[in-house]
Amino acid sequence: MRRAGTYAFVLLGAFISLFPFYYMVIGSLQLHADSAFSGLLPRPGNLGLQNYRDINHAISLLPALASSAIFTLGTVTLTIVIGLPAGYALARLHFPGRRALNRVLMLVLVLPFQVLMIPLYVLVARDYGLADSYLGMILPFAVNATAVLIFRQFFASLPDELFDAARIDGAGELRTLRLVAEPVTKPAIITASVITFVGPWNEFLWPFLITKKHSMQPLAVALGNYIETNASTAANPYGVILAGACVLAVPAIALFVMAQRYYTSAALGAGIKD
Image (cartoon, rainbow, N blue to C red; front, side):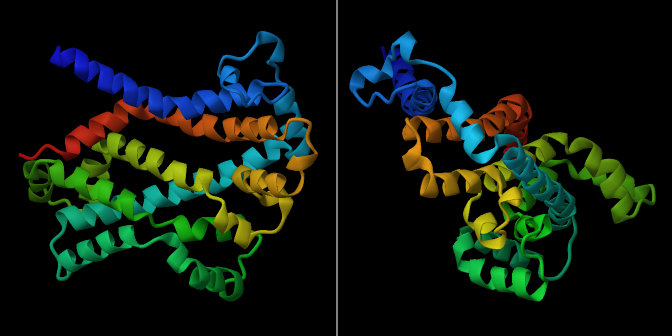
């Protein structure tokens, strides 16, 4: 009886979590909007891909997706390149101020990005002259405190003997990082990549501020502009918006599903202490 109650609770939670995705997909396929409760079980004759054609005609999905990919992949690459050695240093090197640096890192996690947005805009757009550029979009997200903490916890969970053996053989810290630490970090790299991917892929405000060129705007910004200017002229505005939301959601969901095994193993490994 107790197990049945647990299963029922889990199934209820899964239903609540998945229902918005179901509603988004069904709404994107409806040729005519049906906001009634019966619309949750749509008629086959009211389903089609016209909303996807309309959103593609309105904002050109492929260029917008390409801009999102450049912005996101650039951010993920810099995050891994910077976060991996930073996490190794915080976990394995002993230097003055390490504890204080860890506390500062935790403080950065609780600071909302909006607090830093105005000084970042002045710095990137006026001082560096990087407005209307992909580099200007990427730089503020290049250092991700969450990714640094993931690598820190991963390296801290590894046995000390692994690194001591390398040092006894005469390896310096850079060589130890390259030959000993990096080869075993695949789960942590994939976990950090998935977590980092979601942020810039869905980011709206910063790309909207830093670039005004429509050809460079990511899909999230293009959808926002469409909702603001042209959605009211569509025959089924909600269906078109939901179709755009589906296109935006699919890459993040697919990435998480493909990387779930590594994501889980890294999460479990971070909780193991020798």
